[in-house]
Amino acid sequence: MVTSVNVPRLVIAAPSSGSGKTTVATGLMAAFAERGLAVSPHKAGPDYIDPGYHALATGRPGRNLDAFMCGPELVAPLFAHGSAGCDLAVVEGVMGLYDGAAGRGELASTAQVAKLLRAPVVLVVDASSQSRSVAALVHGFASFDPQVRLGGVILNKVGSDRHEVMLREALEEAGTPVLGVLRRAPQVATPSRHLGLVPVAERRADALASVAALAGQVRAGCDLEALLALARTAPPLDCAVWSPREALAQAAGGAPAGSPVSPAPAAPAGPRPVVAVAGGPAFTFSYAEHAELLTAAGAQVVAFDPLRDEALPEGTSGLVIGGGFPEVYAPELSANEPLRAAVAAFAEAGGPVAAECAGLLYLAGSLDGKPMCGVLDADARMSERLTLGYREAVAVADSSLAANGTRLRGHEFHRTVIEPGAGTTPAWGFTHPERRVEGFVRGGVHASYLHTHWAAQPSVAARFTAAARAAAGSGAVGGDRDGG
Image 1 (cartoon, rainbow, N blue to C red):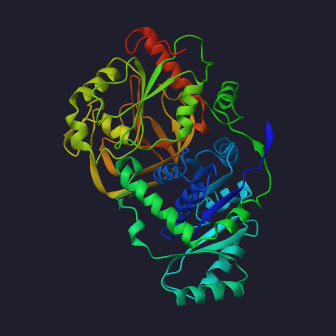
Image 2 (cartoon, rainbow, N blue to C red; image 1 turned 30 degrees about the vertical axis):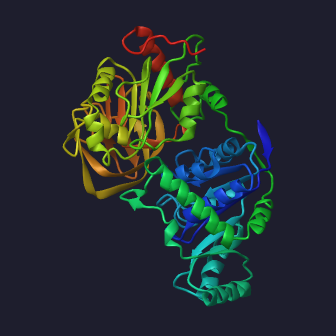
Image 3 (spheres, rainbow, N blue to C red; image 1 turned 90 degrees about the vertical axis):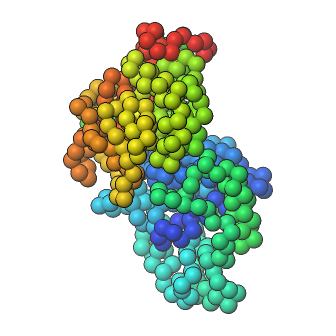
C-alpha cells in the first residue's frame, strides 16, 4: 500500500571518497540525537562498517540503501521502513556524488538515491588544498544533474580563519550556502585497515569516544538549525513501506516475470526453528533486514560469538555466518576448537548453513595456516589483491539458500583467496561483469564470497527457515524448541 512518508531527510555526499562524508554524517547523526531527535541512519551502497558507527551515534540500526543489489524500486520502501517514527533521517552517500556501479550510468550512485528519496544533498568538500576554486567545483556538482538538489556545502579540513573567509567569499559569489566549516581534527580520526574503518564491535569504547568527539566537532562547526530546516524542505515521499512479512507474502505469491525465485512457503504453526547468527568482533557484517526476514519467516534468531562461545546456541537448526574479519582473528577462532567441532558436526549432519565471505573462510580447512572448521575441502589465505565490485549471479544448484536458477545481485569485497575457488557443486554462476562459477554447495551448506541483500529476494529467508525447520523436525540437528 502506497503511503505518504514525511520524514525530514538529508543526503550527505562528497565530490570523492576521502572527503569526510563519514565524519560529517556520523557527527550530524550524533549531534541531532543528543538534542533528543529520533534520527534514522542510512548508508548508500553495500558498506557494512559505516552503519555500525551510525548505529552507535543514533541508537538505531544503520540501514543500507543499495539500488544495485535491491533495485531502485526498493530504495524508498526500505528507507520508509527504517525511518518510521523518526524526526530526521541522515543518509551517508557512497564514493563521489555521481559515482555508481561501473558502466551502469547513475545506478547505485548517491545522486540516484537522493533523487529516489527526493532529498536535498549536502556536499562535503575537502577544502585543504583550494580556495576560490571551490566555487567552480561546487558549481559543477550542482549543475551536472538538475534533478539533484544541492542544498548547501560543509567545508572540511579548513586550515585557518583566513582560509575560511576565502572559501566563504567564493561560495557566496556562486550562491551556494555554507552550512558548516570543520577544521582539521586528527584527534577524532577513526583507525582503518585493509578493508576500511575498523568496525565498532572491535573498538567499542574508543568508537564511543570518537563518535562523541565527532558530535562535538559538528556541533561547533555546523549550523544545525539550517541543516534541520533544509531537511524539512524534502517533499512527501509517496511509496510503499517495506515490511518483511509482506515481502515474504509477495515472494510466495510469485515475482515479476523473468525473475526466477526460490519457493517461499508460508511459516507453519508450531515451534520456531532456532537460526544461530554469528556475531562478535570477527563477524560484524550483516544487514538488519536479514534477521527481520528470518523472524518473519518463523525463525527464532539467536546471536553467538565464535570468538567466545564454545557451543552453538541450544536447539540450533540453522546457521548463518556472515561477513567480517576472520583473518584478523584467525588464531583465536582456531583456538576455539569446541565450537569448530560443533560447526563441523552440524554441517556433517546436514544442517543448513548460509556462509558469506568471512563465513566461507571460517568453514574452510585453514585460514593463513590456522585450522578452521574443515567443512569445506579448501584453504584460504590473505592476498595482496583487493577483489571489489558488484556482481550478477545465478544459483547453479539447489541449496538450503536458493533454488537452481534463482537470480541475485551481490557484492564482493575481500583481500583473501580460497583454493579451490569453487567446489564440485558451485554456489553461484556469475554473469556480470565476468563469467565464472564461485562458492560451494555441499549438503545443507551454501558458502560463497558473495554478499547479498535478502530484501531483494525474500524467498531466500523463507527457504532457509524452512530448511532449518525440516532439519529440526528430522532430529538430525537442533530439535524442537518452544518459541511460541
